[in-house]
Length: 542
Image (tube, rainbow, N blue to C red; front, side, top):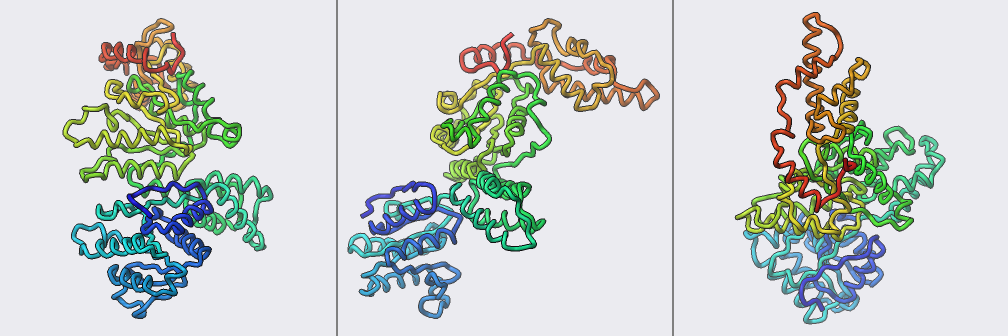
């Protein structure tokens, strides 16, 4: 019934998963792998589906041996022999030989058997016995199925053509709404717990925030929210985001960044990019989805180092009110064969778990380079790039990828093709008007806007005096310039000099500074030439 390995992609939701699983059981597919961390939820769905088909379920784990859904051990009183996988498979064989049991059908469930099957040092008889079992089901037409439950897919080569892989989907919005509504009904019966009056709005907000979490994680977050202050209202939605932060932290490759004190107003210049970002926000809202707006893929910012690309990622996430997650490409790559691609897939899966969110990949060209850039890596970088590009092309989850790059020549052409990013922007050196904005932002940051400084003079000091010149300081250089001037002002006040920040402090701080615009003038010309044909300008063209 199952010639060759295949992957079934069920529709979202437990009901659709149950329907797909029922079809696999009816088709007598001999070996099924269910890929999930939600072991209890998956086992419950298996038992329910088997019950609708009037089939008996027997399960095995190395800690409990063979048992049934009621938790009763089978044979030997649950002693050690049945904790061995070989003994369990022999028990399954005997069960299939029982005419009465075989008539109704059997479902065998193996919890995490791969240490027995995939380890090179493991006894090969385990793999052979499981192959014999699946062959008996397939060739002899047994009304039976063997299901593997595991969060990792580590199938040995001998079994690859016998396995059907199924992913258990996370709870849908509808399922989460149903669960949250039921949770509110239960806690409302207690006089000690206060529940907000706008229940339906609360249910919708929790469901939106909890998308991507497992059922157990949702249960934990809701329970903790109530225990915390014996109330349930909008403030408790923060518990959902704390649970998502835990998920990101445990991944090892992603970092959850705090953007609570940041806003888009703190990003100087880049007016065209900011207008684009503000317009794109609608695609991630419920109203936008109801209207039919497509889920955004992301944006790529390239250009001059130190001109606000990384800061733009933080300001974007803050202005949208979404979590910002940074992917460390250095942690993706591994010396083990196949591990790098698996790390990338795992990072993508975690990002989709936290969605809606902004996934920030800083200096993407260093992790996803053009073909031939990494010589001697056995094609690892190309496979990682392929995994990422395929996901970008096909993703439907609300993960907004915010990529930044400095070395445009290293970017693979496939990354710039239409359909990968919604927009590719070039960030140039700030012009005079943008430098004024940036200087004002940083003087506000150090509480010095009230010192009576001549902003126009500072703008002139920071670059060419012409209105359209882009040969002055970068945003990062302006920030460092303000900090250096503050240090000089502080040193003067400590020796009894005038209080406050003066233009002379800025002139002194500038004396020993060599600007990037002068050091890399030829490279900037090349960057601008590249941008003319590959990207749109992040700022209004002079």
